[in-house]
Image (cartoon, rainbow, N blue to C red; front, side, top):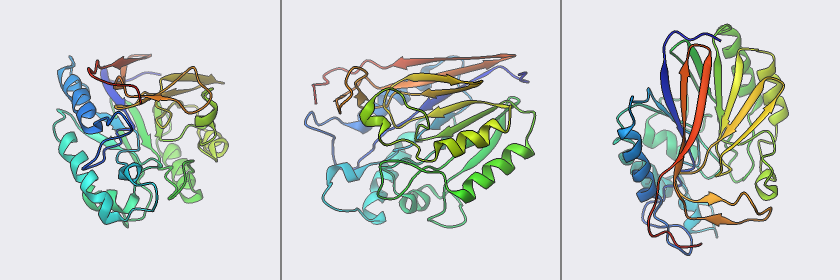
Length: 275
């Protein structure tokens, strides 16, 4: 690996913005915790080049689990998210997670995709590296999947840019993280995705959200990192569902020469009661 510039970037994820509501019995304000994270990110020196926001951007569905919400009901949450992200001092690249609504996302974020129900995927270069984002959202499901058309696009994209050290981002995790209830809703065709990545040795890093905890798994030259949420976190000690309201967190990457360094930072959040 050899990059042409020293730079840093951010991965933060699972923002779970829900306009007009708070989450859980502790009434966690997910917009307030995201704003705390944004404030810290804007104070980082040197300034990061960009942030990847790793899915479960909005989740008004958590306020009413009795029915499937429409795109119109999701749109206020995406507008609220856009308002908060506009406060960041650097660009963002967004992914979709299982709680998102693809049509509402495309409408509000004006992504310019081929249609409002098309997967949201992207690829760009920075500092001698390639960054690729995949869409694992499957409407109505907690698990994720990267469809055949998107896998074909991924292979073509990686073939086009051979020789560039590459980071790939997707919401769902293909490999177990060791928390049983989270590992029951992974990237269902994770083996297919990983097989595609392994055909291209330049792909060395896979970054995921979804699990609301920081982790690292290494297999045969490929490293998967997961990041904490900007709102509530998952217990690392319990194999059954147990979550806590914070502290908000994010992952910082620093790239320079032949080295990639990463660490997770948590933002102190006062007044968080148990959920």
